[in-house]
Image (tube, rainbow, N blue to C red; front, side, top):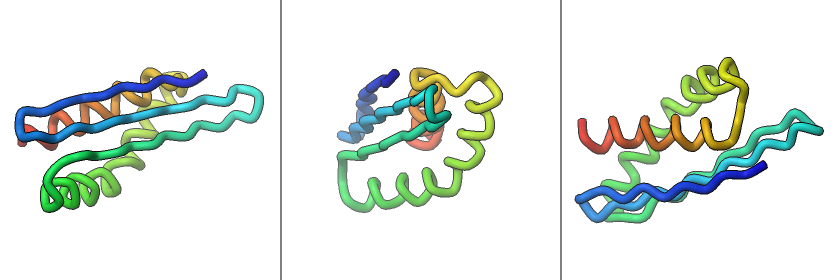
Length: 83
């Protein structure tokens, strides 16, 4: 099962997320691609790295579905981008 989501922000920032769950192997993967001005992208990338552990802890307790992973990632970036 996989799920892809794209989020656009007013400051010319686009975030693509793609999460894949392989129930047979109990594996979850997520890819985040950030498009935007270099300084903004680097800042968001650093914040994402700091927060990704917390996101996955929450998601895994909710079942680990790909769409939920993307929703949590998108929500976290929304909070960061508008902080």
